Length: 380
Ligand SMILES: Cc1ncc(COP(=O)(O)O)c(C=O)c1O
Image 1 (cartoon, helix red, strand yellow):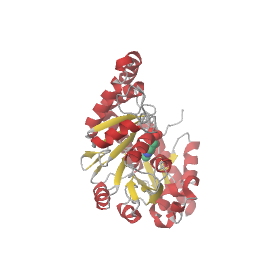
Image 2 (cartoon, rainbow, N blue to C red):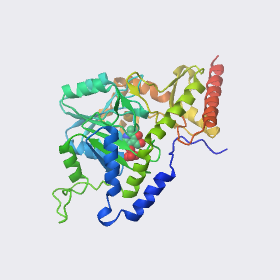
Image 3 (tube, rainbow, N blue to C red):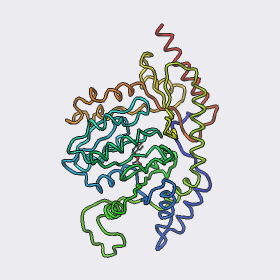
Image 4 (cartoon, protein in one colour):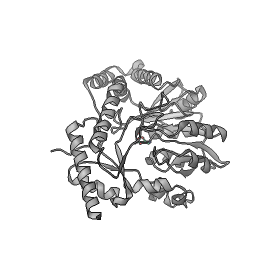
C-alpha cells in the first residue's frame, strides 16, 4: 500500500484546461486576464471589495503590514500556534514580534491574551484561522478597535470557513490566503490579499510592483518596494478551483466526519471543534492527546509513520523555536502563554488530503485507536 498522504489537492480537467488556455492566450494585452477573473470571483466569494493575487500568502502578509505602516519601533501581535509565515514578515519590516496565547477550545488567538499583550507601540495583530477554525472575532475586533490596532486576518488555512455566517478573510483591514499545494484550494504556490479599503488597495498596487504606479510605462520608481505577482497559469488554476470550491469543502467536511465517527469511542483524544459561531472547514483534521497518556507528538507521528501514515506535528509555539527563542520578546513567553505550551506537545495533524478514501481514514482511525489503547495498557 502507498503511504497515506497528510495533505494534497483535488485537481480535475477543468483546472487543467484553464491552465492550458492561459498558456496559450495570456500574453500581450491579455496577459492578466485570468488574474482579473480570479480576483473578481474571489472577492465576490469572500464578500470583500478587492482581492489581489499574490505569489504566496507570506508575501500577502508582508505587503499588508507594510501598507499599514508597520516598521521599526512598532509591535505586532501573533498567536503562538501558527506557521512561522504569519510572523516572519514582522521581522522583515524591522518591527517587534509579540507572542500571545491561544484559546484552549479553538486553538486560535485568545482575545484575553491579545488584549494583555497590547502596548502603546502595538500597531497590528495577525489573528490566524488555524486549521480551518476561527478565533472569537467579535471580541478580537472590539479589542482591536478600542486600542486602535490594525488587523491582518491570516486565513491561509481557512478558505470557506465562516464566522456568524461571514466568510473568513473578511474580518480585518486585510485578509490573506495561501494556495500552497497542501491547501484546500491550490494553485501550487500562490496567495490572495483581500481588503475593503480603496487606500489599502492603491498602496498594495504600488508596493507589489517595485514602487511604481499601476499603468506606469516610463519605468519610474517612486520608492524601493517589492515584486509580488502571481502568474496567469496559477490564476487560471485558482479560478478553476474556486469554481469547484463548494465540492472541495464538502469533501473536507466529509473527511472530518469519517474521523469523528471512526474515533468517537477512543478516550483521551480531542478533535478540532466546530464552535457555535463557526463553520469549520477542517483544513487539517487534528487531535490533541490527553497528556496523561504520556505520548508526545513526535513519538506518535513516528508510530503512525511506521504504518505508512503521514502526519504533522501540531505547531510548536513560535517563541519556543530557535528562530525566536533568543529574542527579548520571547523571554517568559512560556509563563505568559501556558495554553500553547500545554497543548502543543500532544497535538498531531492526521491525514487530511482531498484524495483520501473512507477506507484509508478507517485504517488511520484503527491505528490511532490501537496506539492509544496500547499506551493506556502500558500505564496500568
Ligand atoms: C497560517 C499560515 N499562514 C501563512 C502561510 C504562508 O503561506 P504561503 O506558503 O502561501 O506563503 C501558511 C502556509 O502554510 C499558513 O499555514
